[in-house]
Length: 215
Image (cartoon, rainbow, N blue to C red; front, side, top):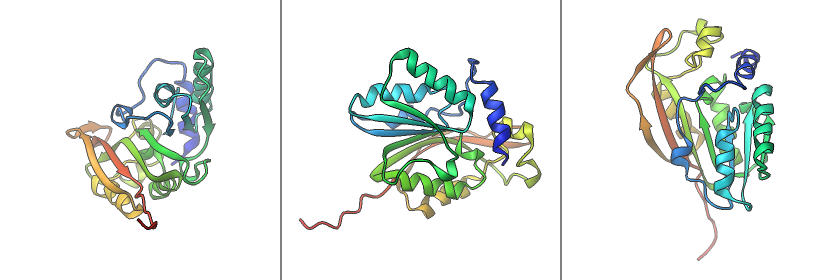
């Protein structure tokens, strides 16, 4: 998928008051004091700033986005509020610019469906999660495979269905990556979106905490 067109579109929306999200992952995420958290597709930084307050001074929150306009707005919002335990970085989801075993919690709202290589994104999520860490992701899936001709269609991309995959394919990616404890927290009835029907879903999963120590 052409990320440059997404960058331009969402940079233009950075100063507007519209809602760009398809879900409320943070409503289920329950950040804890001292945790390191990441928001993939952080937009104007609203969820990042909320999490910063919940993790406190001992915690830290990183927002990831590819839209320069959104990142600039998010940084300004953090500065206005005097919130110091946050940062916002420009990074592709397929190559997240964070070290291994960094995060206790990763959230995302309606962002991963835009990625061209979703399996690679999930491998990156797994890589940067600490053992025992968790993700809560809200996203959309399609009721049938999306024809290839729509993958880079500007209207389809802007309506967030161009990159959607089916429910089975979405969940298979999580299992194949190695996540455990996968749970569907919320799921909508199908609704029309452009040329197809889609559904919204919020999922929780964990990176298994493997301990080889002796008792």
